[in-house]
Image (cartoon, rainbow, N blue to C red; front, top):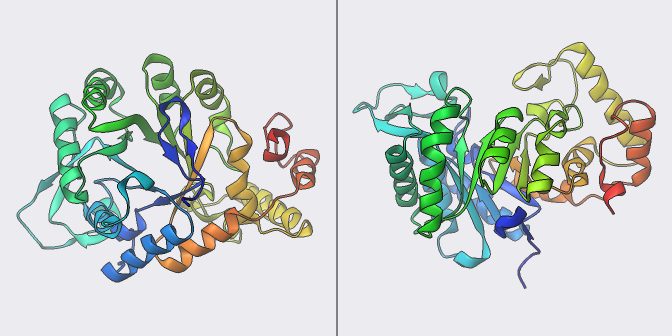
Length: 333
């Protein structure tokens, strides 16, 4: 029997509670071997993960190629795959140097990223992704980080994704960003199906709750939450830990340490509370975790399944570590 999946908003595209983020197997920061990438995806499958997210940006196409290869032979109807548009990969004609300084991936700089939210660029991007993945359709296509290209994405890229959805090439359309304001605009002004929100709905940052999440719930837009550890602080709070990829300020570090202490008194890891917290909001269908090997995948699957007592959420609110109005899983049940 297949593991349970839930619909991503009104799109009906099914997603698992835990989603596999493929940036790691695209050699984010440090190299991963082909075998380690294959083993990571296999471990995810064995752990019940049935939603896999990637992007051309990740490893200049390496993550898409590795993910497609690892999923080959799996029943296509049993998993959901998303990728992204907005950055085209243009060959440089060179194998000198690597992508670490420019893109953060330990891969040869054989291509460069070119922002392109034009209709033609979007259709080409989807075609290139299908080729790298070895698939004939994509379940969800996200507009990727259009922070500086909002009008271009809204007036050209989004309508082309609608056409691709009508043609059956895509199952759903989304927007993936690490801010909440622009996705809220897309939810208001388009028939977008999904939002991938990174870092803006966590135990330390609930900016997604200001407008985006209530609006998504009202419009039937499904939300996938990424960055629940805020780049590390909520995974292991200690001096030098990062929040949004920069050293965490003392105030946030102290809050994270208080959260950890409260969790430990209730007998649960802080990471379990961080992974469970987003599910308190009815718009949230899945939590995405970036993993780079089988051990990390199995750990994430075990931690997300850890029961979190309602008494913990109540204590966090009483102590002012969570705002009183924030919905929590215990309140949802």
